Image: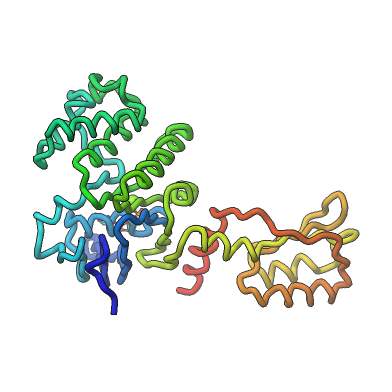
Amino acid sequence: MLDITRNALAVESLTKTFRDGGRGSVKAVDNVAFQVEQGEVVGLLGPNGAGKTTTIKCILGLMRPDSGHVTVFGEDAQTNYPRILSKMSAVLEGSRNLYWRLTVWENILFFSALHGVASPADKRYFDHLLKLFSLEDKRNVEVRKLSQGMKQKTSVVCALARRAPLVFLDEPTLGLDVETSLELRSVLRELSCEEGRTFVVSSHDMAVIQDVCQRVIIMSEGRIVVDDNVSHLMDLFRTRCYRIVLRGPAPEGLEKRLVHEFVGSSVAEGEQGAEIKVNLSEDEDIYRLMDILRGVDGVIDEISHEEIDMEKVYLEVVRKERSFQ
Ligand SMILES: Nc1ncnc2c1ncn2[C@@H]1O[C@H](COP(=O)(O)OP(=O)(O)O)[C@@H](O)[C@H]1O
Ligand SMILES: [Mg+2]
C-alpha cells in the first residue's frame, strides 16, 4: 500500500478528454498515475501533444479532469482548493504571467505580495534569485524591453519567489536560444540542490530533462510509457547499443536481416570493413546477433559500446508504444 502522505504529489488515474464540437474526441490524458517525493526533480517528457500541459493543468486545478485524484503534500487537491494553491506555483508553457509595463523587480514584488510574501527576508531572497538568474542589472527594466530569454527567466523567478514547495515548469526552455537554455538548466540544477524543493519540469526535449532531472516520466498519447531514474534508463540502454566492425565488406543480405531483426540498426562500409550499429532491446538479443553474424561468415574485428544518444532512446520508446496500439 502506498503512503501518499510522504509525497509532495500523488496523481491517481487521471483522465481528461477533449471533445471537438461533436466530431471526435481526444483523450489528452489517459489514466495517468505517478508520485513525486519531496525534494525530487522529475521530468515529464513527451512529444508535442503527449498530454504534459494538460496533466499539469489538471494538477493545478486549472482544468477539471474527467476522473482521477490529485494529492498535494497529503491533502486532496480538489477538496482543499484553492487553499492548496499556496503549496504550488507554476510557469505554464508560453504563458504571459508578467506585467510588461512593470519592471522585473515590480513584477516579483507584485506576484509575491499576492501571496502575502513581502518581508525584508523575502526581498533578500528575491535579490538572491535575480543574482542566480543573472538578472541583477535588469532589476529596474520594464519587462517589455527584455529579450525573450530574460522574460522567460523573469517568469521563472516570479514563480519561485514565494517559495512554494512544489514548482511546475512547463517547457521552460521552449523558444530560448541554446545559450540561455543551457544557462536556465544549470540554474535549475543549482537551485534544486540548494533548496530541496520539489520540481516537475516538462519538456519535449530529452536533453533538458537529462540535464535537470533525476527521474523521467515519458508520456506518449496521454499515457505514461516509462517512469524511471534518468541514470538507470541510460545504463539500461548503454549496455545494449553496440558498434561492430567486420573484416571486409558487408556480407550479402546482412543489412536486410539485421534491420528486420533489430529496428534502427544500420550497416555502413567503413575504412576497415563493414560497420554495424545495432540497438538491442533485450540482453538475450546479443546471442541472436552473434548467430546472424556467424550465419553469414562475418568475422568480427572490433566490438564496442556505442555512445548513448538519449534522444534516440526516447524516440524509440515512444515509437514502440505507438506501434503496440
Ligand atoms: N483546450 C483544448 N481543447 C481541445 N484539445 C486540446 C486542448 N488542450 C489540449 N488539447 C489536445 O490534447 C492533447 C494533449 O495536449 P497537451 O496537453 O497540450 O500536450 P503537450 O503539452 O504534451 O504538448 C493534444 O492532442 C491537444 O491537441
Ligand atoms: Mg505542452
